[in-house]
Amino acid sequence: MITLLDENFSQLNQFMTEKSFSKVFILVDENTHEYCLPVLLGNLETDIAFEILEIEAGEEMKNIQTANQLWEILTEMRADRKALVINLGGGVITDMGGFVASTYKRGIQFINIPTTLLSMCDASIGGKTGIDLMHYKNMVGTFSFPEQIYVYPGFLNTLPAKELKSGFAEMLKHGLIADKKHWEDLIQLQHLDPVGVEPFIRKSMEIKQEVVNADFHEKNVRKTLNFGHTIGHAIESLCLESENLILHGEAVALGMICEAHLSYLEGLINKEDCEIITENIARYFSYIDITGFKEDKIFDLLLNDKKNTDAKINFSLLSGIGSCVFDHQCSTENIQKSINFYKNISGF
Image 1 (cartoon, one colour):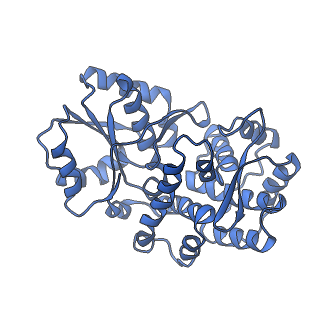
Image 2 (image 1 turned 30 degrees about the vertical axis):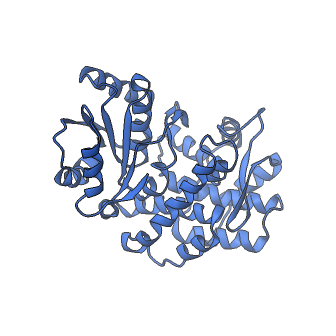
Image 3 (image 1 turned 180 degrees about the horizontal axis):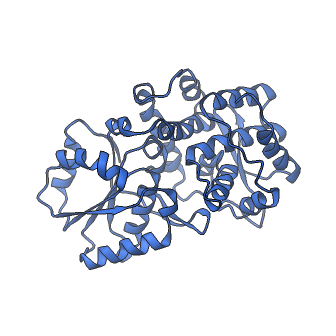
């Protein structure tokens, strides 16, 4: 399902030749339209008619209004059940495009061609599609696998440094929850650039795919992929609400520091490991000031997390560097302490 593309996109062209799609719709935002679409079209060899669907870039576009517009366009262009949607972009595009495709006429085929490190290593993999509801992250969505995921590392050269760093957070997470060596290899990188991270992309993708294969519908072990996301999503949602947007990876990095400290407070990891995790994440990510966010607002969002049951907050926490437990319920006091730990942290 996951294929690294060669310079001529021959694997994609073979896929298009073998299938008999009625029409192709390529979903992009203005950034991937400018920087990535010319590369795709320059290598795409097909006689199938195609249309370009463009939306504005940004998490704030991942909503039901945008989805409705795309459904209407597909309807107006007479897309049938043999049509194909190609999602060319980052996490917003693959989440949104997958959601629209998986619900239009009860589901048409789609493929993901991720263009950011975040979408290559995380968002495009696993069959989760979705949109945000109000300021709640990914509250509406489906479980639906893409037909294929095609990865072209050359797209990383089009990214701003902060976008590359955002994806690196998910790579660090994969190491922390499942592969200590992957974590140790990643923290040896002195500078984050496409050349440095490229050798580790496949491993990070494989870690996520293995977890997904074991638990597609997130009933058990797939929940470990949410490490750093419970608190991270809450902060990301508050930033979205206040229109002071941060990148998803920045929120996850913040969340991993909080939740590593929470793992320590809950007696799951020792102090030394907690300090190693905090210090290394802080090497790559700048401090985000969350002192203005009220505690009750953060807890309100934590209580609305999708993983919760019976109004209890379920965390995925580390039991060591390279291992993780899920459905762990913590004391309110320790959750507060972990958030305050980040608020008062020094050394960034």
